[in-house]
Length: 418
Image (cartoon, rainbow, N blue to C red; front, top):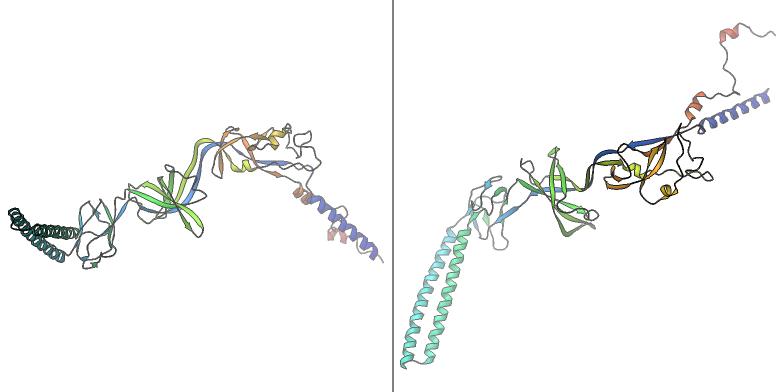
């Protein structure tokens, strides 16, 4: 009895393994299902992305050439100013005293020059009458020239004092808006070494610029005049537009990464853009609008090679099971193995190679210049359907015993007689 039980168990195990193998093996009736997408009209843009900072188109740092104490400030942050407008005033008392001193030096030099001039004239008259020597005349000329030089020096120093007094009044050099005020009334500024910055004035905020850095790998694609779109965190739902104005040729190297500074100009009529905002920039380096487009995955799709020893693609027996009613494609080795760019188009239920010319490619969709028409279905992938699921759900094992009968029906026969 034990031997018989072991034989039955072994047969059952073998049958179960065979059933599982048959269930998991692809069905010979499996068919290939092609994933396709249609060629449609659309817009394609190739972008170079970067991050930059919003800045005024032109701004000026206003300094002072004169040392002194800030006596009065007439403007504050965000104030609009006109060219030549007085915005701050240095204390003038010391400067006026210096000017008066220099004017006194000029007056003294003029008196000396007048005196030496008359002396020279008298000496020349004496030399003409033989009452003085030529040496006396040379001495008179020497003194007159020194007096003239002293007078010029005194006038120059007086003029400088006048300039310093005039520069004590700080005026705006441009029409614009005060972005920054760096001083307070009563503060002393020293211009002996470096001219201190008192104010920063932007010419106008109706036009702004975005200063960004482009990696060396992308700098060859960006050129002045290209369209730019950018967003700022302050207005995430609004998209701003601008134009690329300048690609600066001076490289910037940071941690062995080479970048180039790019300047983008944008209108700001509503005043939404303010200096310092971070801008996420998209530079449109190539574009095509309202053109036939196909998914890039169709360009990347490659027909799997037929198994070894099977008829080549396009022969009487195709390498893949054909869908119902489909006919195999004609053999065309040039289309299959050519080096040109191609896609696979469903024709008669089976994909056939089609050479194409591709234009702008944004990484998602590509412009189709020629080779395809709007509405063509291009293959982007494939699925092979198998009968594994049906085999598992519908499989039976003839070697397994049938389930026990109902206990009620089994009880009618009663126990076996001893």
